Length: 93
Image (cartoon, rainbow, N blue to C red; front, side):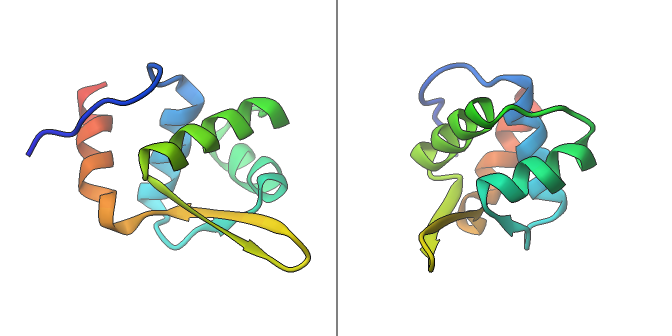
């Protein structure tokens, strides 16, 4: 099965976040947590708008799951049902 490419071409931050999630499939965090914890672990500086744009693209592709917790915060994590598709996507880059 061949994965469909949707939306704009991936940027390096998208690739880094996907690789982080493949390596840490249980990881889940808010936008602020991703900037504070994931970005330093993957060795990149992340701006809030840039990370939000990448998260929105990954959610629209179905590669990230999002849920809201109280107080209202969106938490992002890997859509494990799409892991194989993500790995194929990363291999093609």
